[in-house]
Length: 610
Image (tube, rainbow, N blue to C red; front, side, top):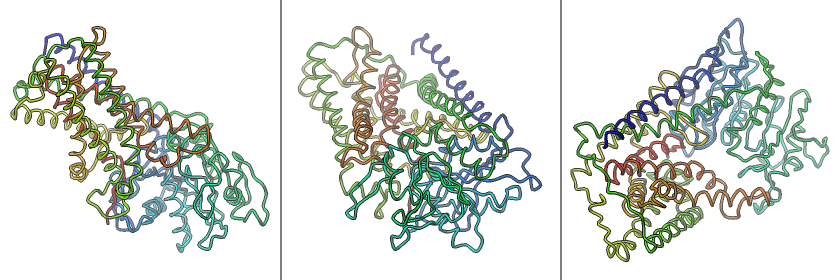
C-alpha cells in the first residue's frame, strides 16, 4: 500500500472503533433509560426441559415491597430477542418489568422440535412461569405480547394458561397475527376470557387479517379487516356477529369488564417491529390494562435513538472489516498479499456494450431465479422445514441456494464474456488476480478468517459489557453460541460460490473508469448487485398498496427476505472492490463477505430439529 493509503487506513480503522464504541455506549444508555433500568442476560432450563435465552429489564427500585407489572415480549419467526428493542426500551422506561425472549429455535435458546411447535408456548409460557416466581413482579399483572409468530406464541400461551390449575396471564397484546376466533368445531369463541386483549392489524399485512372461503380463497383484504365477522367477534368477546353484538370500530378501547381494542395502522407486517405508531398503541394498551408505574405520554419515545446508534455501529462494523483487513496486510504474516492493484483503465465503446449486457443478464437471472425458486415445491419444503433434511435452517438454505445459483450464472457469464470478447481484446486474467496461486489463496483464507474473527470479537465484547449489538431493522450483527459455527458450515459453501464469483466479476472483468472515475464504476456495480431485489420489492409493494393484495403467486415472505439482501449485496460489492485495490486479489473480499453473511444469516433465523 502507498504511504498515504496507510495513513488513511489508520484513520478509518480508528473511526470504525469509535463508531462501534459510540454505538454501544449510547445504545446502552438509552435501553437502560440513563441506567435507571438494569439489564441482565438470562439463560435457564425451563419447565419444558429446554434451555431458554432472554433479556430481563428491571427498573431500579422495583422490589418485593414495591412490585411492578411484568410483560413477556417476543419477536417473530426468523428473528431474535433484540428485535423487540422498541418495546422493551419504552415499557421498561415506564416502570414495567420486561422479559424479551428468544423463542425456541431462535437466538441462543434450544432448537425447536418441528413436531411440537407449541412446546411451552414456543417458549413464551415457560417464560411466564419464570416471571410469575419473581418476587418483585405483581402476580396479578402479568402480560404477554408478540409480533407475528411471537403473537402466535402468545395465543399458544393463553391456551396453555387456560388449562393450568392457576392462570398466570392477565392481559394479551397481539401484533401482526390473528387472534383465535373459533373453536375446534368452527364456532366463534373467546379463548381470552376476561383477560384484557389488544390487537394490531396492519392494513397492508402480507400474511394475516383476511377472511377466506371454504376453498381457501381470500375474500377480504387486510385493509378491510375491521368490518369482517372475525374482527367484530374478537371485539365482542367471541360473540357470533350473526347472533348480534355491537358494531365496533378500530382504534377504540372497549371496556366490557375486560378491554378489547383493534389498532389498524396503514403499514406492512415487518414495519410493525420499527413503528412509532405500533409502539404507541402498545403503550396505550398496557397503561389502560395495568396502569403505568411511571406514566409517560405514549408519543414520547426514545428507542429511535438506540436504533440510530446501533445502525451507526453496523456502519462501523463494515468499515472495520475493510480497515482491519488492510491493516493486516502490513504484518509479516500477510504482507505477501499486499500489492498495488492493476491500474484501472477506461473502457472502450464495445467493452461498455459487453459490460451493460452482462449487467442486464445477471440482474434478470437474479430476479427470475428468485421468483422461480419461491414457486418450487421442493425448495419450499426445505425453506419451511416441512420435512427432515440436513438443512435445519430452511430460510437460510433458500437464500444460500439462490445465491449459489447466481454465482454459477456469474461464472457462466464471465466465461462467455472472456471467450468471445476479453481474450481477443488483451484481457490477461492471471495479471488481474484470477489465478493467484495456492499459497496466496491459502493466505487469503487466513486473512479473511482473522478479519471476521476480530470483527465478531468486538460484537461479543459489546454484548458482554453493555448488552448491545449492531443492527438496523432486519439487518443485524449479534453475538451467538458456538453451535452456530457448526450450523454455518452447512451454508458457507453456497455463499462462497456467490460471493467469490461476484468479487471476481466486480474486480477482474468489470473494473474500469466511467469518465475517468473508478468510484462511479463501483457505485454502478453495487447498484446492479442489488437491482433485482429492489425491483421485486418495489413491484410487490406497489401492487399491494394499489390493490390491497400482494402479487399472486409471489408470497410476502419472499419479499421480506429481500430487505436485508438489498443492503448486503450493495455493501459487499464495495467491500470487495476496496480490498482488491490493495491486494490485486479478488478472493479476499469474496471470502470475508461469504463468512460474514453466513454468520449473520444463521444467527438471525429459526433452527428446527426432528
